[in-house]
Structure formats: C-alpha cells, structure tokens
Length: 333
Ligand SMILES: [Zn+2]
Image (tube, rainbow, N blue to C red; front, side, top):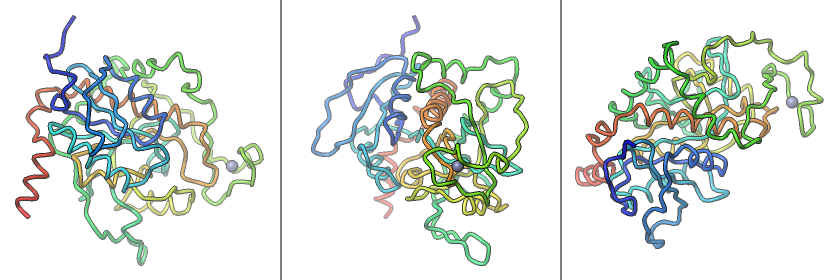
C-alpha cells in the first residue's frame, strides 16, 4: 500500500488543509470523504471550542471544522477561521464546503444537485458580500473587496475542468458519491422544479398545491457526468434569501453574473485563503424546502474530495502557511 509521507496525526502541526462546514449533514459528508480518520491532537479548550474531525485524503492531512450547532452566517464563519489559524499553525488554505441556493438564468442552466465553485472573474475574487454592497440606479455598488484565493490553488481548477471534460477519464465525482451509498436519505431526490420568478409559493408545507403550469420548462439534461459543475461568482450574506426577484437581479446583472447564494464564505475570504464549493439545494425562492439538502451536501463534498486528489501535496507545501501571512500583514501594519 502506498503509505503517505509520515506525519504525526496527533500533532496540530501536521495539518495543512482546512475543510470548513456549517451544518451537521455537511460535516457528516466531509468525514465520509476521508481515506482514513485519526483521533487527532488534544487541543486547548481555552482558545478554541469548535468541533473538529481529523484525517487523511491521499497524502493531505485534513482538519474538518464545523461551526457550532445553530450558528451560521459570515461572522460565525470568520470566528471559526480565526480559531483554526491559532490552533493549526501550518494550514495553507481552506475549503468551504456545503449547500447553497442556485440562481438559474438563460445563460447559466443551474439545477438542483449541481455544484458551484467560486472562481475569480472580471475583478471579483470569486465571492461578493451582497448585503454590504448596494444596488443603486440599477447597478451594484461594492463597499469592500474580498480577497481572491491564491493562484496556486486556482491552478487546480483548470486541471479539474480538463479531467471533467475529457470523456475518456473516469467519472470520479460519481465514484465519490458512492461513499454514502448505504445512507438512504442522502440519495438523489427525483423532483426538481423551478417555478417562474413571479409565481409565489402557496401557503402549504410542500409545493403540492403550487401550480404545475408555472414550472419553468427545461430540457432534459444530456451529460456524460452524473454531477454538473459551474465556476464563477458566489454571493454571500447574513440572511437566508427567499426571493426570486432579488435572486434574478443579481444573477442577470451582466457584471455580477451570480451563480449561487450562501451565508458563510464572505466571513472567510479575508481571514483565510479559501475556495468555496456549494451543492445546490434550492433556488432561493419562496418554494424552497429541505428536500435536496443532504444530496447537495454530498455533491459538494464529493467535489472537494476530488479537488484534493488532483491537487499535489508538494504544491500545498510550497504555499505560505496562513498563520505566517497574518503575522506578516500585522507587521506591515
Ligand atoms: Zn411552492
């Protein structure tokens, strides 16, 4: 067996990759993606009260951090990131992995169970904080800029896209999904309905009372892969978006071209070099429900696992530990 380069799994110094999630189902999927789980180091509870799981994916030593139960939003995510910097001084970057709401448009055919990955474009760093920026005169005004992920990490996206497009390559994401084959509630739901923007949800627990005529007609997908992956800008805010009109305003703005909405990434971007991976669980409208949460969490985790398999550990080792970055920035004032 190809043993990884020996590192001490009981030492906080051994972990170079942070995998951050917010919900219990996201945490569950993350742990299932590990090749091997470690008991991990004893950490001082004085400085850090987050829940961690430890393990290895190929040669990467990964610490999975989950936000405390019931805590969410960009500020909670920022706290977890800062705790992790203190506790694990050799971390190079973080993956924020979990669910998000999709923003389908004529240009971006986003569906439930798809994966959206943050990628810088047109001067945006891959994530915008949409409740800080404001729409004025039909244009989005930015009030602050979020950092982009490091180039060395972005390079892996190019490689992921190549492996995905090449039909001769195996469907590795589909293989990773099988890691939860034994869990019935994590299997792909059958129903994916996108309602017209101006059609609100009827006041019932499910969409059974909603008018079928108002479902947007979308052609059946013909794809050589089980999962579909989109790359671009993710909008991050502190409240749950349940408004299809607001969604469309951001998604159809040609400058923003938002693919997905979520609630943590903006808290991480300026604290950690970070890539955001979101499985699409709803369409940010009044019809949203939890039916796709678990499968979408699994889809995002499968992508993150594949990214770590493609990313060479040597490349990670050449990145500057983010604790040192923080120290350097403080010294530079
Ligand atoms: Zn409905």
